[in-house]
Image (cartoon, rainbow, N blue to C red):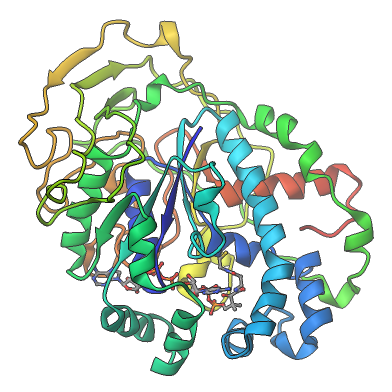
Amino acid sequence: MEVYGLTGGIGSGKSTVAAMLEEYGIPVVSADELSRMVVAPGSPGLADVVEVFGPEVLDEHGELDRKKMGRIVFTTTEKRRQLEAILHPRIRERYEQVLDALEKAGHPVMVYEVPLLFEKKLDQQDEMKAVILVTATADTRIARVKDRDSLTTDEVLARMRAQIPEHEKRERADYIIHNDGDVDDLRREVEYLVSRFLRIPPRADLREASIDEVIEEIEPELELDESEIDTLSPEEVIEEPTAPLETEPAAAPGQAPRGWVEAAQAQPPAQARPPVQGPPSMQAQPGAPTPVQTQPTTRLRAKPAIETPELEVELQPAAARGSARPKSSTSGASWIPAGPTPAPGPALDPAPVPVAQAQPSAPVPPAVSSAPHAAPPAAPSPPKATAPEPGGQPGAGKRGPRQRMGTMPQLSAPEITQALGKELSERQGGEESST
Ligand SMILES: CC(C)(COP(=O)(O)OP(=O)(O)OC[C@H]1O[C@@H](n2cnc3c(N)ncnc32)[C@H](O)[C@@H]1O)[C@@H](O)C(=O)NCCC(=O)NCCS
Ligand SMILES: Nc1ncnc2c1ncn2[C@@H]1O[C@H](COP(=O)(O)OP(=O)(O)OP(=O)(O)O)[C@@H](O)[C@H]1O
């Protein structure tokens, strides 16, 4: 599986870009979201945090008081290191579980959104195909974060100081998205990234595992460590509400019918230096290696979807998770099909129909229009499936509760991890608390 890193300084717009990428059906896992999961109420991670920082970092509901914690760790480096030492291995473990599940579900590409990608040298661990940087001026980022999180300028600056400088990130990135304009500008940048830099194979080509297969595969990795769980007192264990998986109505009129998949197939990006810059110029820097040449768009037809059986696991509604900040209420991302999908090979029309040939000089390949709000090329997750954002900008701003596609319920990566953890707890006799 190809993993692309997505990073950027605080407030640069990583999550906004991530939400846009998801509209193209690209699974995105967010380290920030995983970091919330590992300190969920009742978790061993939270117990360790309390042991080191004291119960005063909990709020009246027994949840981590993130604002308070932020004030502590972003003013004292030593404290930040202590918190990271507790959380980072757990985030890593979760990430690997989700990555595995995505891989087993047949996804060939995923994006890992990590604010500290360069700080933690993830780019040097030979596990990322390329690193995408979202960048904006410090003034823009400060203004956005103050607006979003009601932090003071000093508090935002303290977080910035805990991160490596922008110019250094630019030197290390493979692809740079400039986000000083408006959301439409950003969307054009993302369209360019998707069509010219990332490789998105047709979804119908994938072999997607059923949820049972995924459970079977990752079950051993999710086995709970009872010794860790026993450190929690009953008062610390707070049951989170659960609700059945929500599904989406069938495709709206005018939408691509299910089974039709259209995607721009691009070459994998070269690990090129200097980094490829996206639009507004829509061109690489002079002297920079040309970005990926887009191949003819291929249209594949799949047989009608097999009826999806009911899921046995119950999921928390996305909106009920997380804590204070709206951004935290979403899963962070990846889409994992929960039910069977059309089988590959014979299920697909064996004769792909080339529909267009990208012109090298064309700013945006035909499968992706450069028009603002154009429908993304990949059928699985069209913009209509995304919760509308304030101002009618799908994918812009904070990531709202995830919408579900058609007859094929899809789970986000963290959702599947949580759901599987819960199911395993129940199978083990319900003695353990959930992770
Ligand atoms: C201190 C905490 C509780 C504050 O929570 P809060 O909800 O206010 O912020 P949130 O987690 O959404 O992070 C917002 C942004 O702050 C920045 N940030 C977060 N943690 C760090 C860190 N350790 N170093 C530098 N910047 C950080 C990132 O840009 C991040 O995108 C939280 O950030 C945390 O647990 N940090 C430690 C875990 C971590 O390193 N997370 C980063 C992803 S690996
Ligand atoms: N081009 C843009 N125009 C206007 N607002 C934007 C733009 N890009 C992002 N924003 C807003 O700026 C804020 C920060 O964006 P976002 O949350 O995507 O950044 P981030 O890099 O994920 O932040 P963090 O590092 O804190 O997690 C959000 O409220 C978002 O809606």
